[in-house]
Every structure is written in C-alpha cells, then in structure tokens.
Image (cartoon, rainbow, N blue to C red; front, side, top):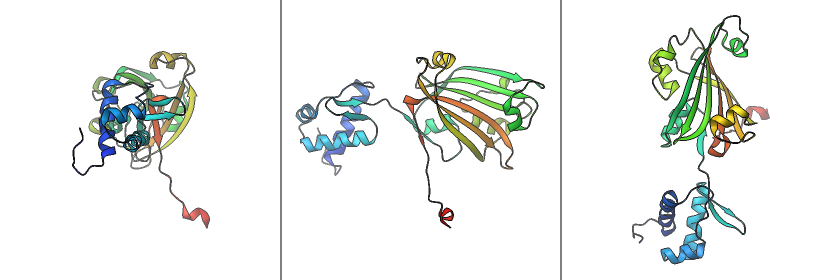
Length: 243
C-alpha cells in the first residue's frame, strides 16, 4: 500500500487519510479510531498518531477529548500583510469565489454619507455583492468609490476580481490601506443572504485603500462567515519602541 520512496511512512499515511476525508467525509464527521486505522492500513499505532497530528496541524481534523477525532470545517486563509482582492488570494489557494448577486447604487450630491468625507467626493458609487466560496454562501462585499473615478463601471464590470478589473479598465492600483477587523452578529438581512441564523458570528473587515500618491480611492466593508475564514497578520518587533 505504501511505497519505499524515502518519504516517511506517517506522511504517506497522512496523504491517504486526507484523500479519504475529501472523498468520504464532511465537516463534523468522526473518523475511525486509531486502532481501526492501524488495522486498516497495516501500520503501527505511532505512525497513525503522527499522521493524525499532521492533519491536526493543517486544521483538517480536531481531537476532542473522550469523543474522538473530527473533520474540521475548512477555513480559507486571508493573508492581511499585502494588498490584494479576496478573489485573487483565494484563487492562489485553489478556491473558487463567484458572485451570486450584484447591485449598483448611486449616492447623489446632497445625500449624507460618511464615506464621502473619506474619499473627499460629492457623489458615491456603491457596489454590493453576495459571494459564494466553492458554491457555498461565504461573504457580503460592499465597495464605495467616487463615481467620477470609475465611470460606467456598472456597464463594464466583467471580472470576478474587482481589483483586477480596476487595474485593467481604469488603471487603478492600490499601494497601501488601513483595515479594521471586528466581530459582529448577523442581522436579519445578512443572515438571509448568507444562509445562516440571525445572530450567527461574522467578521467585518473595513478597509480604506490608497493609490500611489496616497490619495484615498476606495472604502470597502467585507462581511464573512467566521466558520469559513481565518485572518493572518505578521507582527514584528519594533526596536525603536524600546528607545
């Protein structure tokens, strides 16, 4: 069953278990106990244990004391340390992000809106999208622009990645951004659109993005189902703070 190819036996078993989980199990299912895996694959208990530890490390399964080993809900990883669209990042992880619905709204001159001050404009364009991850409701996305910055975008937008489209069509590229991440409970509308119960835990990512000249170009609010997502931030030691 296992090849003598220099790859440790526990890693080969890990790959076998991973394939089996993908084909035959869903989130929260319990996988066979170590003894049964030992018997099935004709390997030692320590090999089984190390293989499962590898799967735990990769967030594929989770051990629950006295209950067994369960398949985890697969979460996508969002690396917040560089600017890029959610679509572009998930494509790199081999995930398919698609649009279920999209709408465009113009917030006219004279109408009050807090984003107008952020973007220093009189007239706003608001794009609202419901996004599916591998065909499952995943996120609600709201993007605001000065309407003069993206003329006729509602007639032209034809890419799943908004940022890629902005660069291609309008030569808009973001160079830095400020982002705030907050926990929130799903309201009635969010719950309906994401197919969850009202009050379900969500994450809200609010971002103000700037161009090369440090001019604010876009404000976005991304609301994501917390059980499908994890946020990665790299921290470093600021030596100057100790001076």
